[in-house]
Amino acid sequence: MSDPYAHGHHESVLRSHEWRTIANSAAHLEPLLRPGLSVLDVGAGPGTITVELAERVAPGEVVGVDASAEVVAKAAALAAARGVTNLSFRVGDAYRLDAPENAFDVVHVHQVLHHLSRPIDALREFRRVVRPDGVVSVREVDYEGTFWYPHSAGLDEWLDVYCRMHRGLGGEPASGRRLKAWARAAGFADITATASQWLFTTPEDRAWWGGMWADRALQSAFAEHALTQGVTDQDGLQRISDAWREWAADEDGWLVMPHAEVLARS
Image 1 (cartoon, rainbow, N blue to C red):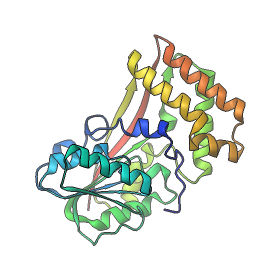
Image 2: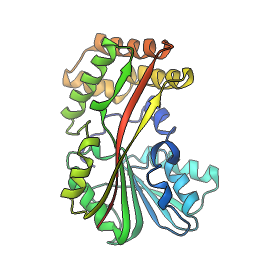
Image 3: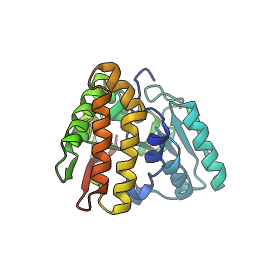
Image 4: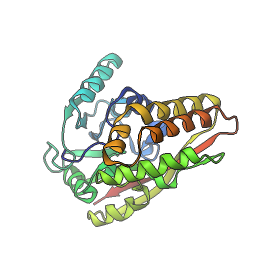
């Protein structure tokens, strides 16, 4: 794709992607999954959700698509390790999918549209490849709706830097609130809109999420883009990293990331 990926594929980023499952990231779609369905997973990443989709719909065929060849190879290795054989992965472009019209019963998309400069065009492409009686399932975070306790000037700085950096790349970090409107603009006539959240509050969750973002703030493409754009400097990145570790160590620490979901049909 021509659109840059705000996070990149540093180990700290993949650490969060590999945590994702149907239960914590696609529960809105789960009731519709049944054996025999064909599924396209756009933006499959390291494949943790994709493999579970393939297990749920077997013997139906599942295809995972991602823009990164390195991540596609990682996802294929996961499928092989799990012994999932009704699943293949390929490098692809969300705007120009390598699939004919009406090819899939389900198109699943998780955390992709907020990275795209033309999300409505991508949704039209998803609509093209789904069958007339099929469903396009999309879930998007709304970064600007993220909130936490206790107050942290460093995390305030993180959110400001992140949103400015992300918009500087052409994406929309507050995609969640726009998702239903985008689906309507793409021509979907039947849209079920829901919302869910990621909550991090236990000591284990705080240590994992806060530690992951403390590393990302200094080492991932987030840091590279923020520095290149002049959104912050190295001292600012260090403040953000330190703030994540301080939040993770606080017994009162609590953070919610809201997500919007749509099940869209033609």
